[in-house]
Structures are given as C-alpha cells and as structure tokens.
Image (tube, rainbow, N blue to C red; front, side):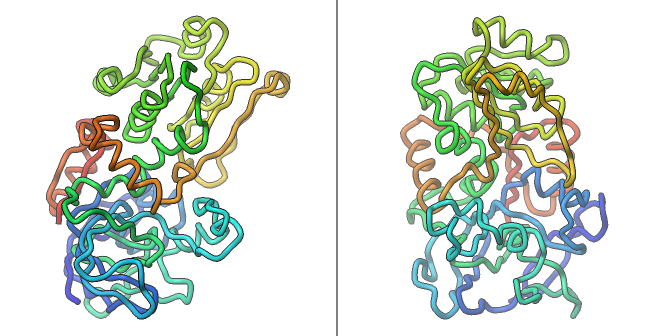
Length: 365
C-alpha cells in the first residue's frame, strides 16, 4: 500500500514528508485509512529522544479513520468501520485481564520501540525500513497499521476527524480525574499545567461536580480558556506562588491535585498544595531517569501520590463515554482543537511548542 507520511529522521529535527510503502495487515492487525491525527506532547518528547524510540520513525499516536482491511483473526472491527486509535497493550497479562491495560508490562516495547515484538516494521521508504508501530499505529501518515486491541469502533455518523485526540492526550486528562482520582462532588482540585491534558482534566472535574477547580499555568490565554471550561479560579504562575495561593484559597489545601508538566519542582508544589489526606496524580511524561524529592514528614500526614498512565482507562469503554459526554455538552473538547493539513505539520509543531497558538493540533490527511 502506497502512503504519505511525516518522518522524524534525527533527534530534534523537523518532520520530513515523503512517500512510503505500508504492508498489508498481519494476523490480528488492521489497516486504517487515517482521516486525522492529533499531535501530542509525547510525539515531541520522542522527537527529542527523551524516550528511546529509534529513528528514523513515523510517529503519531492519536489517529482516527476508517478501516480499510483486516488481518486474519480480527473480529471486533471490519472494513468500513470508523475507528479511533489508542495505545497498544498485550491483552493477555494479569493487568490487561483485570481492565488495567494502561499498566500492561509490555506497554513500553509495544508503544515505544518502533517495531513489532518480532522486530519487524510495516513501513519502508525507498526500500529501506522505517521505524513504526509507534503506540501501535504511527498515524502521522495517510495509512496506518494498527492492532485490533488499539482500535476503538465509533458510530458511523461520528465526526471522525475530531476524535483522534481521545486516543491519548484528552483521554489522559479526563481519565486521570474520572478513573483515577475520582473526586467527590463538592471537593476541590488544583490542576498544574493547562494544555490539552490539563484542560481535559478541568472539564472532567466540572463534570464530576468539583466545587473548586483551580487552574495553574503561565499562559494567560490557556488560563482564560480554563475558566471558560469550568475552572472556578486561575493562577498565573508567572506572578503568584501557586502553592501558597491554593492553600490560602482552600483554607488549608486542596483535596486533590494533578501535575501535567513533568517538571519536578511543579510536582512538589502540587503535592504540597494539598491538605493532610490529599491526593495528587502525576501525569506528565518526563525524560527517563528524572527524579524528584518530597518532604517525608509532609507525606506522613496521609498525603498520597499516584502515577497515572493514559487516564487509567480501557479505551474501548472510556472513549465512547467521552464521545457521549461531548454530545451531551458536558465535555466540549472541540474547543481545544486547531486543524492543520499534514504538510503543515512543522507549523503545527511551532504553534504547539513555541507560540502556544495551538492547544491540540489535529493534522488532516
């Protein structure tokens, strides 16, 4: 199958657009004609080699599109089905069988190693292998080979070009609230960093009935949008000590906190902004080996810190729930999205990473 793809050739480089060839799906695999793919912070951290996905590689892990062909043994989707592509997992380990697919022991090799587990790759360029299988999809391309496990079937009338970001970033933010922290109605929460993940958490916190939702960021535009989406209070970290402000406005500390920034000092502030018995979720993906410190005596007073991957979700269950919430007006994630054509991918990177014009860039194929 001939396709067109955006390829990262070297660490920190720009995406290079080129023609590629994609294999037919093998057993358990699905060929998807990609309609669009969201750009996630993880794509850029891999570009910078914070995670060791080998280059050159086709990245992209928030794809959506239409099933073109299925391999032998695939039963849950068929040609013509609209699908959202999420992360890959084995489906057979104890974690997966208990509904904790995001904590599958094979998550790292399946999603970051750029190859199938047998060492093969479905993409070649001018006869040379290109690393692919990124999050089981490599969807910065007009066609994608995915596994059956990471295909989520959606309704025939779904607005498919919009839905790709539900596969990772938006799922991560919303799921960290709805599946992991599970705040009680009337509780308070502080969300540090309101990019697409943090803003998704703001919307989910509002839907959960949180009474006080505090958004912390350095970008005034994103703080303004956070207020529109449900934040009751916003803190500009350029001018205000967020930890002190949160403790003051909550009368001793928030019930819950969430860090999306992957900055150790910010995570420390998030934990310290909660009261005794408060709980904090760490969501941001830092460079491998990054460490942080906490005050042990502060933690003794019942505080909890938990890591959350992919919103602790089962994509086939959670993504349809988010779509239903959006249709009901409870989760208007479309307000985060800016569309680009695939050949504008480097502009989308600049608008996401440098200028902040785009919160969730979506590339149309």
